[in-house]
Length: 384
Image 1 (cartoon, one colour):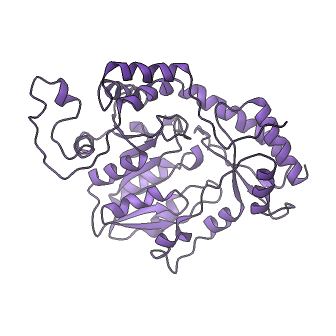
Image 2 (tube, rainbow, N blue to C red):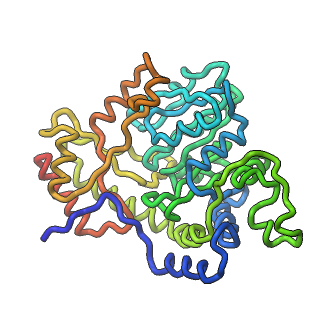
């Protein structure tokens, strides 16, 4: 019997399980020593000269980042329409307005020219998304932001460990003021749920640490390890409940040590798919620009017009043969809520991409048999 291929399966081994069990046995379950160590190790991965603040999701990191940048009512933030809704929704949390822009069809990312055309006197920040693991052109975006006095908060939910011009996204040299990473179950590493806010700016870091736990003026772990009593704290602002648990951080520390292993496994599978699908009526995923490195969070193909099936027909036939797929994403301007903010605007590149795009299975633990199955089914459906 042919085994079905899931769209994703997490790569969690005995070391992760042992780390979580050890954390359970320690008696410290919420934010504590494991989270402090996780933050330190993440910071070291990025060069040691940034702050890393663990939170319970990338959405929380995006929200805290915008808050720390001073985004509020009356401000505009430029964001791609081709992204998950979380990227834009955090702008609304703060009473600001998302200004949606189209994607570069060759990069599936925003470009500086499109961003520049969307700027107004109310623009406060730019939020590029490193789509599927491929870096945006951060050098050009940074130059544009500096020219206009704008901040950059990059959504790196897909982008660990992605590099731009040799620099890891999130590092000081990569070009953003704040970076938000995701450790959701299907990301390039996972804590189940979780995220990390990274910044080189001490003031932004202090604000994010305070606001991630109710606006309390002392860090959560410090309150239980400092000689001052745990109850001796002040609430200086109406904050949020965004801290990461030690159980998640214990798992994250193990996963972080495996991040290059994970990236290499994904890259090998992506290269194999490229070789297998090169003669089919597909547009293959864009590779990293020269000097960059792709983290291959997703492997997205586009069904060309000459293919014997439509995108939806392709998905259906793969599903019938036991190969799961997904679509990343239906652009936000097509969604009911966001459509009210984009009426009269055109996003031709995103619309065309959405009609054709399909995400194929790609995950670290994908066996050769599973890869073979995906290749055989895709080629069979497309007449290869």
